[in-house]
Length: 115
Length: 106
Image (cartoon, rainbow over all chains, first blue to last red; front, side, top):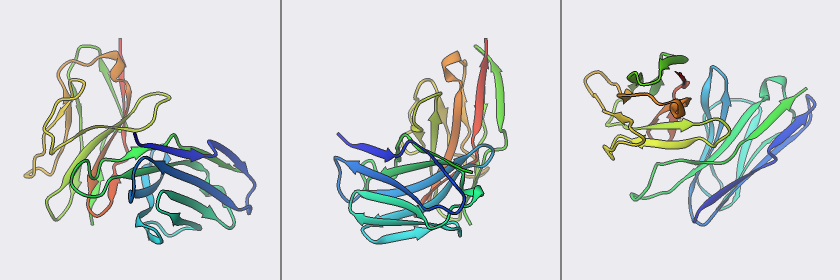
């Protein structure tokens, strides 16, 4: 069966420090991968999505970036964190093709606090 | 541009009363719509999708293209329905509304 892992689950970082959140998917190949940020009153904001290795679409201009070095690995990064980057980050995947396509399966999330 | 609107941040309903969570969308093509739910201390998960036309946990949602709506309904609320509900729309990517917190009162 397919599983999705996110880490770290919780992270406290000072302003200006770098960030790396990792997401891996098991049990499937060539998934679509997504990073969302969940904030109270702002819902789920799509940050990045990827349909394949090295293919990243950015939805929101910001100081975050994403990379997909392997088929089932999706990384969210920043060189210098801002206070406004604090939030709950969710990784998700979906199948490509017709069967089960477009249904998102979410990870447990990573809570980032920038001080 | 495509957009999903959930006008209510919080909806409080008594146990046994009907529930309706509103969702409106703007999309130029033929939409594919979903409802996701997040129960306390659980992962966000799919509740239902419009193409399945199914009832999950007593919830149904009908796509109304004329009104560009996809409201989520349940005739009799249960306490375990208390959760955060998100409406979502798929284009080449999947976007979500801001969510509605449903609180079932005893």
